[in-house]
Length: 204
Image (cartoon, rainbow, N blue to C red; front, side, top):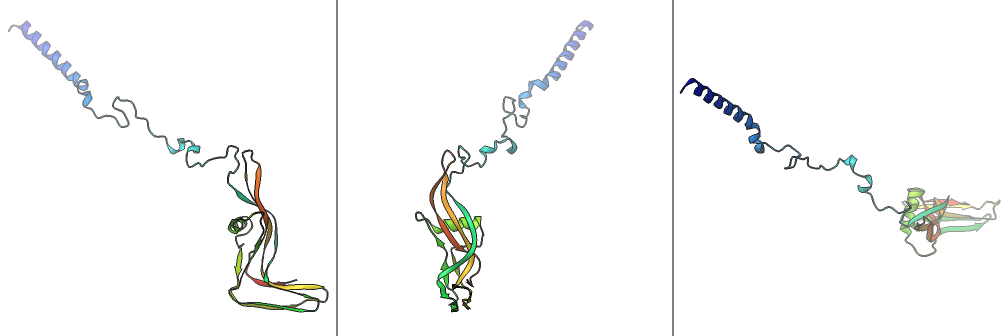
């Protein structure tokens, strides 16, 4: 082989090696691992939005009245007054100069009074009164000890009374709901006198 032939062969071999080495990076590209969060076509896979990006109305939101008014029936309480709520069965009356007495055994129970336009469960009214007025309000009270007392109607009074009872509250109540136009519609109403504190004996 002459010098020209050897030179051509060496040049061709060098060119082949250079091209082969350079082609390795692209010739086997399909075997490279797929990037994280990328689909098979190389495009990013759509990710779920962060909590902060989620519309608040779509998370845990209940049905909303179209006019923003509470759709459920509720109790409205007005004209609340603190007063003594007595037990009618343990109340005695007398005129001026008469000594009145009353006694009750441990475990004696009496209830408050509720009036209605139409019958309704007392528990609904009592629960609303507890939430609105005082948590100590109840429909019934029970004596935990034996109680008794006496009182003489003073000469300055024409008559008087002595009774077992408890300090409590009187109030007016309405049950109703809002219609589509946000107008309050009353379905029932009445008054109530409910005991609140511990039983005791009072007079007037």
